Length: 222
Image (cartoon, rainbow, N blue to C red):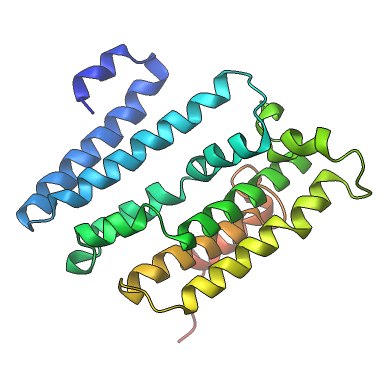
């Protein structure tokens, strides 16, 4: 992680990567004052893993299902987003909590939900410019004996199981604060809202516009 490496990037990436680098530098200065510089260290590591996961997009490689899933969990960006949230959570997000975040079953379940729902809606809307990188495409050759389509097969199994795992894990006693658990659960709810019927980011005027307006434009009656 070195800002001088920005010069090696294509022009279209330099601006965004520069903003991200500056943002992390600012977080590091603030968290160091609080004695929590480790929070930025762990979050940077998750960002690196996310970047490695996205490299698959340019390779045109059709992975087996298991191999795809291991990469899809990281590329859902759940880990990066939650680790970033933890930066602002103060003393309840310590080194122990960051180490916990790297492996809990709850995170795996919410990542799976994000990956499957995203793939499902993007596949149906033909929104992914590289259709090889869909879970549906990867499992398609293995479903010739099934009566259900790949889309329905995924909808009936994996998301349901992941939701069940999410609920069960939220109900279990844990060694971390409930406030941290809620970050994972709430982010999962947001992801479900965005991708439940279509790819909300790609068709925001049709699906997300009403929610954005209710939050930032429409007045709340008091």
